Image (tube, rainbow, N blue to C red; front, side, top):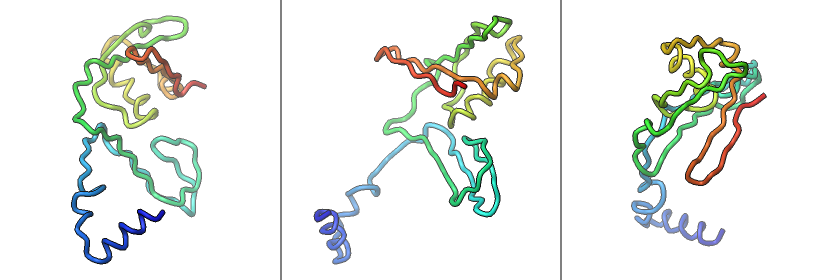
Length: 146
């Protein structure tokens, strides 16, 4: 804690170190749209990434950022695997934009695949889980599975 207090006391004394130190020189690039949820301390409400109704004592804002500009998304593919097969099984499409979160990703599935002779049912989309593969590291992560 000592170095932090030294910096704070120096700023109080008129130091200009803060001009090049910390958040003032931070540069980030937005990777996706912000997710915002208002506070609702006196009643239960939902949030974009939490559909469970509950009182929320504070507003939330989530923004995905990157140190470098976000490149083209055409290298990211979404592939559908539908239990029992059907017209949607095996279809693939590139991501149109970086999802703000799991709920936003699920909602975008209908936009991506409906125009491809594939009618995704709303109930299926609401429960869709996904597997994230990192081919570089050889790792996978299961997200949103019931």
